[in-house]
Length: 268
Image (cartoon, rainbow, N blue to C red; front, top):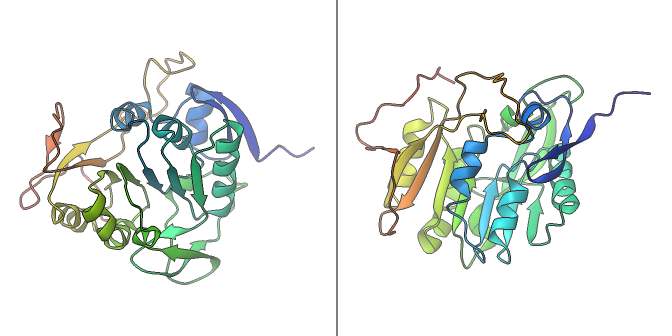
């Protein structure tokens, strides 16, 4: 019998389906029973019951289940354009009795259109959260829609992890950002895009802070003390509306006109 491609892992959030071949998220769920716990510890401080939360680039839902639970009875919206990851995401929401989530198999961008998810061998080991959409070439066509098309009446938190698509997502969410003033939590680890992302959010009158969550935490769900990713962090930004009365400690504020990244990146 062939080895199952999708397996169930017992995690801090509950049972989780995941691609057995994924070298980051699934490996973390297997070894530690959680993925990027520093990221979730920060996010849970930003979510209140009844809040509308949007996650663009939800992957398999390693944080989605917790985020949806935290904002209930508010609505949790998730976008994930990789078909198999979207199917796993929906499975995880259902498996964990999440009833306040709306998931879309779409990408978010500047305007309505299409993008290509490149051909990926999900049976081979890889980092499937690192797949970037393309404008053309071989692969699977997916719908692209601007977040503004949802015409959300409220949004308290907007989480974005889209592997280089960040500028387009922000342009397509400009109306939502201005109207709803959500806290924005966004990956910004592409050297070629960093200034563009910083400028786009700062233009909406936000204070920006670097956040470098580790992939490993010694107090993980399984109590596993072996760090298989020593020193590895994500490079994210926490963005707070300037008018918000939020006290931020332990974060480095970014001056959009004069900043230095906290880690050195290649020219991706």
